[in-house]
Amino acid sequence: MNRMVALGLLLLAAGCKTDQGEPPAAKYKIELVKDVKAGVIWSLNFGPDGRLYFTDRDRSRVELSALDLASGNITTYASSAAVRDEGEGGVLGLELDANFATNKKVYICYSYWKDGDSSVEANARNRVSSFVISGSSLTGELKLFDDMLGWWNHNGCRVLLSPDKQYLFITMGDAAAAPSNVPGEPDDSQKAQSKKLLAGKIFRIKLDGSIPTDNPFYNDPEVSGQAKAMWTLSHRNPQGLAFDPATGKLWSTEHGPDKKDELNLIKPGYNYGWPDCMGTDPCPAHPPYQPAAKEYYSDRTIAISDLTFYRADAFPAWKGSLFFVTLKTGRMYRLELSGESIAEEELIVGNLNDQAGSYGRLRDVTVGPDGFIYSSTDESKIYRIVPDAQ
Ligand SMILES: [Ca+2]
Image (cartoon, rainbow, N blue to C red):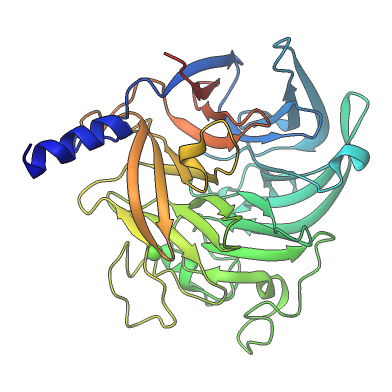
């Protein structure tokens, strides 16, 4: 047996992908969990009660829903908080408090109109609030981080607890064509480079909305007020955020314009380049600069969305892997990291020859208490990846 044949048999035995990016056969299958038959299912989080909590972007008030997997029943908890339900805006990021089992507290990032006035485009904003589930309602809104610039697109809005459960991380897009609300600051995508504008950033706040004094720009003389919450700057539209439980490092995904979606390792105080540098490009004008760990791809985008890390037992071979999903290409990627680089990559859903995907636009991804991988779509469906016994 020559060396190439031996290698081919080894790859087949291990169920590895081919170089066409096709997923391994007969290890897993994709199941439809629920057709919600509503709007874009933007964020998924399993609760300690085993229910799958989710936000539906396209609501006029902030609402939170919970799916009971056994019965298929959905319970929706509504608040009175008005939503800027336009384009990519709406009810977006969701995180559950560490003590959710007892306090029923959630954090939601959503779009709104400043002063409730939708007649002025420049009033488009995003905020993070906490709410409490009480009976059939969401009550007790506390506005934790307000007045982030918004637009019909590029609203970011992923929200994530730190591993020690003491901080909230918030992603915010560059708010596209939204005008500056600080005199002298830019109105275009250079907003992301401004240290004075709440757009194109990742922020870190405490759970009560106060700003940690050890944030990287807290003592920067150019930075005042809420901008002291900046953790990183110069992002285009980061909509994925997750900590690697193995390393404690924070990773983010970010939409590129017509090319170069990014997977980024997030380092406090770093500049991520937008709009002057993209992907893995060098960027001497903006030190300290962190290039993408990988760009997807040099000549096109996949519309990269949320990511998560796998540490459950249902798929032992995937333990420690990073999974992310994509919108316009409807894919799920699995990556094995090695330090700050990517050691291995395969497609779990979709393939590189298919630019549309068979399951719609995959928006969010999370891991269930059963160890299965759940993904929601813009077409209001929830799927899961389960082991295939055959
Ligand atoms: Ca970048």
